[in-house]
Amino acid sequence: MYPTGEAPQSRVGWLTVGGIAVLAALGVLRACLYVTLPGHATVVFNTFSGLQKGRVELPGVIFRIPGIETPITYTVLTRVWEFTNNPASANAISNAITVNTADGQAFAIDVAIALKPNLATLDELHASIGENYLSTVVVPVVRSKIRDISASFNSEDFYRKSQRAAIEQRALDLIRQEMPTVNRDGQTLPLVQVEGLFLGNPDFPQALRDSIERKQVASITAQTAAVRAQIQEKETERLLILAAANQRAIELKGQAAAQNAQLADLLFYEKLQERIQNPTDSLPPLRIIRVEGDATVFLNVDPRQAALQQAR
Image (cartoon, rainbow, N blue to C red; front, top):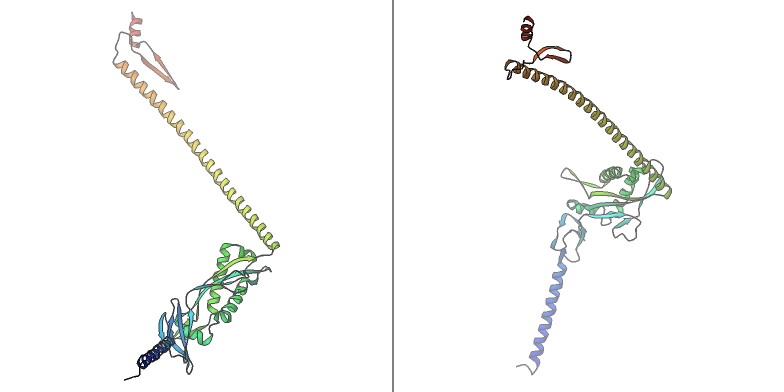
């Protein structure tokens, strides 16, 4: 038998020890588990063997050895990074890029680039470049290629939508070529996938801006004049066609009128002949004597009756 009060104290002690053990176990278990969030991927660095090549953990829970294995997580979603002087930009990675154009003009321009780490080569990206791949690779490559491309275009080209698209595409192609790659299974794979590049509004000096605007106005005026000339030419052509059509219509009407007059004369002659052959009264039938030109001469006396009268 325990002394009075000794047994309850013993139970409390054991419960305390058990609780501490459970908490310690939970702490160890939690330290052994690592959660990779959606839109991310994790590579694992081992203290003794270094980076574990070929091991890229997708979103979910992984087991690690505390103190020996260190997980490093990357965002693998496409993000847009900006080269801009705007302090309010949340995605700025460098200042705006100053370029020199083929016509000798210099100005700064904002650039936005859409990219993401290649999930298939994430372990190689961490091993060869590291987490600072934006500042060590992306920024210098983009700045260099934008400057190279700009040197082959005039300053006005950055003002025109069609030419800006050409500049963006050529710069995008060069940047993709310059991104670091790795050869795996006979395939060359990029460490960083560049998906798009966009030029912002160029920060032209005021004098250059005024000059470009004047040229744009002059170009628009010339194009408007050319369009008006084409419209006038088409209108003149339309009027000539209409005049020719009216003249032809008059000629056809004249021909139709002449044909109708001849038809009327023919019908009139047939009617007269019918009256001659079928008289309806005692009056001598009307006889056609001759046709002289456009005039017809008629005689209202039957020649045979006239001859009989003369014989009497």
